[in-house]
Amino acid sequence: MDPAFLEHLRSQLAEITDQGLYKRERVISTPQGPWVQADGRRVINLCANNYLGLANHPDVVEAAAAGLRSHGFGLSSVRFICGTQDIHTQLEARISDFLGTEATQLYSSCFDANGGVFEPLLGAEDAVVSDALNHASIIDGIRLCKARRYRYANCDMADLDRQLRQARADGARFVLVVTDGVFSMDGDIAPLDKIYDVTRQHDAILMVDDAHGEGVLGRGGRGIVDHFNLHGKVDIEVGTLSKAFGVVGGVVAGNRLVVEWLRQRGRPFLFSSAMTVPDVAACLAAVDLLEESTELVDRLWENANYFKAGMQALGFDTGESVTPITPVMLGDAQLAQDFSKILFQQGVFAMAIGYPTVPQGKARIRVMISAAHSRPDLDEALQVFANVGRQLEVIS
Image (cartoon, rainbow, N blue to C red):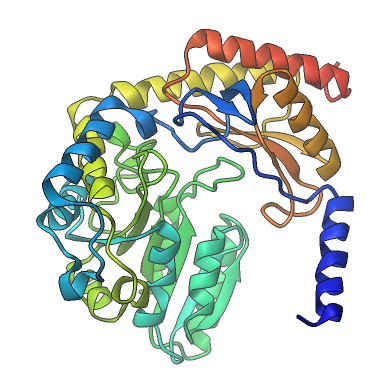
């Protein structure tokens, strides 16, 4: 390879290291849970998006094993050739029932789901209007389509209205508005009811990515659409099976005709192998657990409210979060890296988040609370945060 190119990469890596932005992976040698063995150390896990503790739930594990025995492992095919088994269609139907949508389509990941929505639906004569803080998968999906792009300030309805008016003034045939449901770095909720009102005024299509809302918001974790009672009013709902559901995969749910068209033209669906059998079987078990009881969702919120109140009482800035996502705002990227390192040394696994995941100057420790955490787990984590916060003079 060209030595000059390699030197360019070496220089870039050195630069982000100096800025405290180099990402180092910790290697976990145990199942995902409230405690894990990471880099040889037993630590409280405050990193995972394992909201309901389903990633290693015995019912989910057993369902995956049973699916493996009855249906095999991989499909070695895309869905439309020979990659659709009965359990795939069962899961799609169950998710539609759970979310209250007309139809659902499975993808290998939520990133693929967002990557497969915009290009088949929108042409050069159309427009897409996106929240400024939308997830990277939405941004990349929009880049794959030819529609004109407009961006509105985060959760700013006046700016959304302005951008929609501009899109119509520019002659857009169809306009699609897209927002995250829960913003994963700040933990705030999009005002979807107000967004719906604005989009209806402009006859726009409404899409929400509810990756951090499904399993968390709404009745028994049915998500942001249920939270705002907007069933039948949100045209497209993208979600993930890798967070609250504890497995892997993505979904697009909503209007039946939209889903049918995406099955015909969505490139990540057409050209990616089907979800493996154990994953699908495990997801079915996760849906069972969510439909049987609200216990896990209730416990998640009890734990989240307890931890957040404890952090605020200690003097930490937890931002604008109103969900179990708890950002510990530190500002400086190197401070966040140092804070995370000392936390780990004292038995708490909580990673620093910096640019480009969040804006420059907005570095933080992002804490992810789970229903699987016990009250003693949370008390111990609060004590370690207090120790490190005082050591680094973040709190007094």
